[in-house]
Length: 382
Image (cartoon, rainbow, N blue to C red; front, side, top):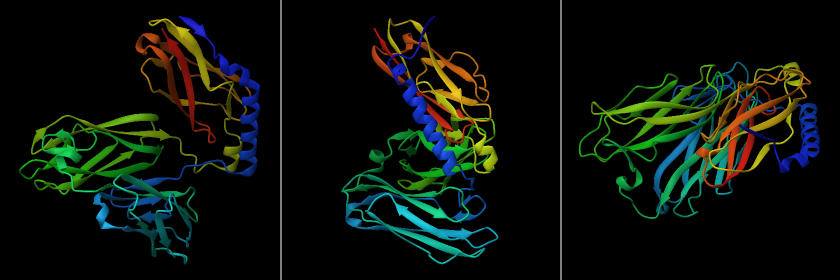
C-alpha cells in the first residue's frame, strides 16, 4: 500500500487555516451558528418545532399545460403553540412567483395562509420554485415548494412514467428525499400512474424500518394517477446517506423494489449557547488530497489532517464516499479539544476509471458549524 499526502493543496495550508479560523470566530461572535429545527409529519400535515403546523410543504401541480396560464395555491398555517406567532417574511426564489401571507399575529389555534402564484410563462419545462418562510419562535426558516412539469401538448402516461412495476408506473425508482435531522421526520409525495387496462390495487412489502409508504387512491383507475406518499423517521442510529426500500405489490403480485434515500445529520436546535460555543471546530489542512498519478490496480492511502479548535472532541458519525473505490482505512478516532488528528481513506484504483478521478467524500459530524463536510480525493489512473 502506498501512502501519498495531499499535493498541490499543501501550499494553501496556512491560508486555509487562517481563513477558516477567522470565519469560525466571526460566526461564533455573531451568534449565528446554524441549527436544525424539528420537523414531524404524518403525511397529512407537518409540524415545525411544536410551533407551526402546515397543511402541506409542497404544492405539486403535476403535469400542466402552458395554455393553463398562472398556477395558484395556498398553504394553511396553524399556530399549535401556547402564545401568538407572526409570519415575519416570505421570500420567493424567483420573480415569476408572487406571494401573499397573513400579516396579523396568529393566536394559539388560529390559522393563516400563505398564497403563491407561479406565472407559468417560462416555457415547457419542469419547474421547482421555493418560498422561504420566517416564523417567530421557529428556529430555522421553513422552505415551501411549488413544482410541476409544463407541457406544450398532452403526452401519453407511458411516456411520462417510464419505470414499470407491473401496471404501476413511476418517473423514478430511486427517490431522493433530502436532508433529515436526527430525531425528526421528513416526507414527500410523487405522482404515479396505472398504465394497465384495469384498476390497480397498490400495497407494499419488505419495507425498511423507518420508512412509511402508501399510495392513494388505491385502487388506481385504469389510465389514472395517484399520489405515492413516503415518510422517513430517524432512529438515532443511522447517519449520513441511507437507503430505505419497499417492494410494490400490484393487485397481489410482488414486483421489484423501489428506494428512497435521505441524508441524516445531527439536530443542534436544542443546544444551549454554552454547548454551541464549546462545540468542536475542525479545521483541515486541505479539503482535497491529490494522489497524483497511479497505475490501475494500485491501492493508495489518502490522509486528511485536521486540528480541533473547539472546546469539545470532534466526532465523525459517518463518511459517505460517492465511489466504492474509496473506503475508510480505519475507524475514525475522536479528536480532542486542541489536538490534531488524521482521517484516512483507502483508495483502490482498480475500481476507478482511466484518467482523472475526483471522488467526493461527505462527512457527517458533531460540529454545529460544519455538520456536513466535503472532502475530495483526486488521482489520475494510468
